[in-house]
Length: 307
Ligand SMILES: NC(=O)c1ccc[n+]([C@@H]2O[C@H](COP(=O)([O-])OP(=O)(O)OC[C@H]3O[C@@H](n4cnc5c(N)ncnc54)[C@H](OP(=O)(O)O)[C@@H]3O)[C@@H](O)[C@H]2O)c1
Image 1 (cartoon, rainbow, N blue to C red):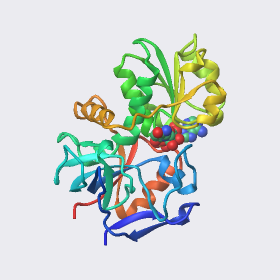
Image 2: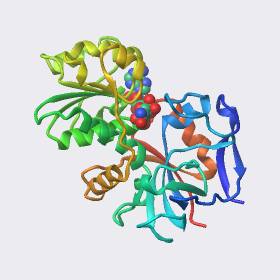
Image 3: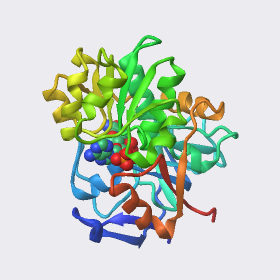
Image 4: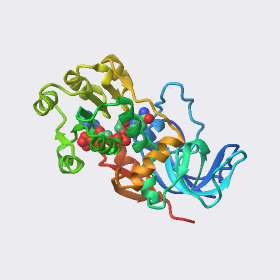
């Protein structure tokens, strides 16, 4: 039976395990994909720990980890148009990503451009799409100044590239070790930690026009003082703190249109996926620990060899 990396109950990493699971069968509107690569996201360990966004039902256990994949269509469910067996695709699976096989709802899947590797395509459905949704939501004019917190992480590197492309002046917080990494994207680097708001104000004396927050908590609270119009504060990381400060959660589109848009940008080289580490499926625990420590650089991807 195909292998999958799952959590068997809510809790810490000790709840994770490799299991042999039956190959899933696509229902109406679904694709069965042989996974070639799975992006690793903070949401993976948060889900294992029991965190759930409002309105999301508890997972059926054991639950396969992972929420973004690229792979090859193995079977097509009833009512699916536009996909065929053998197509290279990427998207948001409903049966997890750290596995040899998964199910993708066709409306949350798109064809992988030939110019993109499976590994790069697996970074698009969550990290790049969240960045894309947020930059569009802010709707800033060229020349505006955007502050991105956590600019050196998975969503941050994508948001920074999209913002620079849109003609924004981008200031980003990232730890000292990521200075060169974020500056190479055209970001004005600011070290997080005590005094961060003053350092941002030194770079943007009148304050910033918007904040795209990817960290939350006290870091966000301190930085909110550099933003006058709180309706221009959005977060992917901490909706409670943002809402207390007058901001909003990023509104996720979660549709094929956004997947196609980010894939086109990535294929054109405008949006570089910046995968900094890959792990084969049997080393999925190491990949997830790296992201769970909270200081990943760019994107981390699990690769699954073709059968
Ligand atoms: N709502 C959604 O649909 C959605 C989608 C994607 C992501 N998210 C959420 O958005 C957040 C970011 O996701 P991601 O994939 O970019 O995560 P990530 O790759 O782990 O990046 C987060 C970055 O935050 C920085 N950071 C961590 N703790 C910090 C602190 N105390 N102060 C300042 N910076 C800190 C880290 O950089 P340093 O090493 O520089 O500290 C890290 O690179 C996560 O909370 C994730 O769950 C939500």
